[in-house]
Length: 246
Ligand SMILES: NC(=O)c1ccc[n+]([C@@H]2O[C@H](COP(=O)([O-])OP(=O)(O)OC[C@H]3O[C@@H](n4cnc5c(N)ncnc54)[C@H](OP(=O)(O)O)[C@@H]3O)[C@@H](O)[C@H]2O)c1
Image 1 (tube, rainbow, N blue to C red):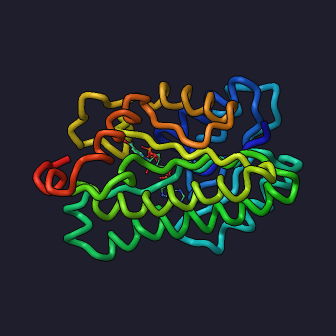
Image 2: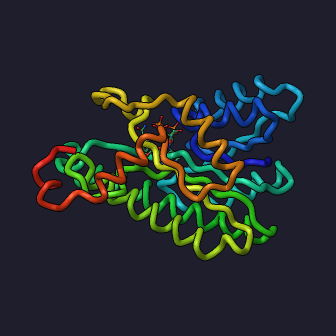
């Protein structure tokens, strides 16, 4: 695969990018400008020295003006791409966002508007060359309105619906949309939060997501147990949701 990867500097994105490079996929990294992006590219290049160096370009989900140039650079370096992966995202606690509307606005802008607009750029380019895979990390937080993730969950709910719509509209034209819905996974994003019983590790998530990409699965819950947890949560009546803290 020739993969454009937004979010490979940390957490689940880093684990997935490493796994892809190690099996021979070619990657081009997009991300916020800085040392982390260069360090990640060097780390990936060292894992597959037979490949050309891993290229990078600045791309910030908070700034849609960066999207077209970033994808142009990826196209030029990879000679076209067949896969786009977006693991980049922003999290803040519900308490922090309730106390700071500007922070809430930032999370909503990155996780919904920025991600959707970036996907629109990517979708057009993939379809222009006959299709490909668009794999995007949403969250189980978008499955139901829940007290601890009212705002973050709203952004991810919108993102999940958008990706579902893309799958319905464009799969017949060759666009394989893979929506990843992680439960709680131990990364920098969740550092400081109390892990629930089914907390996952980024490496296991990466393995599962790569299988989903290869198989073109439209939705993947990871760790898998979250599929069943969310099945129950989706069916809980509203009066129960008001009572519980989940
Ligand atoms: N961890 C969980 O439990 C969990 C659960 C459900 C869903 N998710 C979702 O899964 C995805 C990956 O999560 P993670 O836990 O692996 O996160 P993470 O370790 O915090 O990594 C987040 C990544 O997003 C990038 N990023 C943040 N803001 C960005 C922006 N404005 N523009 C471009 N890149 C940006 C970061 O790049 P920098 O190096 O520039 O910071 C980093 O590569 C996210 O979409 C997250 O919402 C996570």
